[in-house]
Image 1 (tube, rainbow, N blue to C red):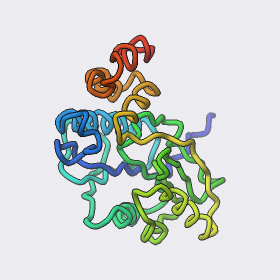
Image 2 (cartoon, one colour):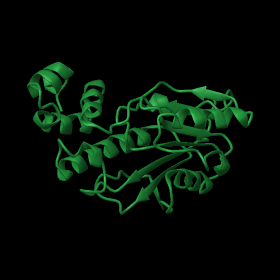
Image 3 (cartoon, rainbow, N blue to C red):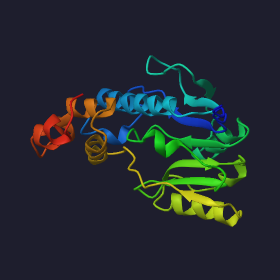
Image 4 (tube, one colour):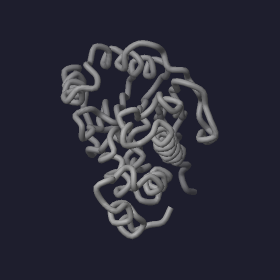
Length: 230
């Protein structure tokens, strides 16, 4: 007889803001309006949650600032974000779960299920660096909020400081590929090209003339250039 597949051991955490105009992706304004920026944020969040839903996991948790909307697929528990700076909010997310956990944000809609599948036999921590110097993923086999508290956030060396914190604790760190967060119009164009079939890319094509004002939108992030349709 075929042995049964092992039970998933990882809890997936997605930390996010409700995509409300004026509260999300404000660095996209200008060239986008607040409404367009929120639409891009919603698409990025929907893509991220859709990918997380495809990964075998013991539990899926959305750590949310705001209220859930139609972008939320089934199968997620909702945990409200705590107040305070980002390091405290990330620490609280890990404190809310037990057992191995992998946390990601809503800013990398190009993430794939394979990147979120962790082999904890060879790692105590998982680290996904972001192109801007931060990090897009952090996994801990034994969640310890103290590993995040005090790490300076939103700086060019945030990722380096966080990874050094993991190594200083004696953890075996498995590194994931560098991904690009969506913060600016240039980021939006690049990520849409990298993951052309998702909801985010479809929104980026819709706003192409705004996101790429110096070039014809069809040449930059149109369907031919992306190699896909929405």
